[in-house]
Length: 307
Image (cartoon, rainbow, N blue to C red; front, side, top):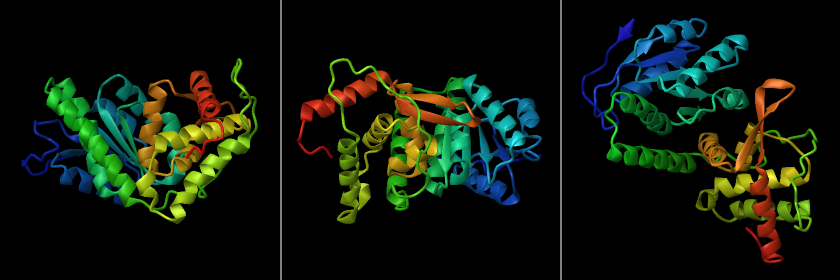
């Protein structure tokens, strides 16, 4: 049954929109989703449960966005829902938000990688509201109400969400979480470039993390560079890097790291590779041109300290 909220329009919803569709695994998750949607001043429609969600989504005539609230893995049921979301969002039907715990990071990032899917990992309420605003911009464009000012506003909201993530979390540290363990053959064509010792890159990474002993890490947040360095180190050591490990290396909240990961993949700096042994996980590696550019950079700076 559809539930309609106050007609007061928020700053995030200047135009009348269809309801936000909710798919949740638990009553607690449903409550969290409703609280966020209410805070954004939008109305919502409910899904019965996760098993019925794909069919319920298919029946929905229009949706401002789809909010998926996950608590734990449900194997085939969850795979089916995420595959449906990826297909629908890729087709421009709606934008989506998937809120999940860190234990589901690899699965969600493997199944839901479209630009218009906002993935939230252990997110704060501010992050959740900002992501909902970004997701509903898909519906605004479909209704023909998007304009240049709205596009600029969406970019500002994304920047705001990233800044909130950086300030709100002090838990993302390089020492936390799993590290890639399986060795593979990843050798780019180096041409006339000199060999880059793995210890050189490791020393730079250690130096960057060492700053956290003396200053707040938020002062130096640079997830793009941290991810580039981690993937370069892994490439030299012939290691595969799963998404969860790369997010840890970024030294920012996982939600922020995932956004950077999507952006850098879209720009051709990173390449996603499916895990041949696990269809619910992907690895990330440097594109050949990115690897060559990094190696040329290190060759150019020589013995100068790189941090």
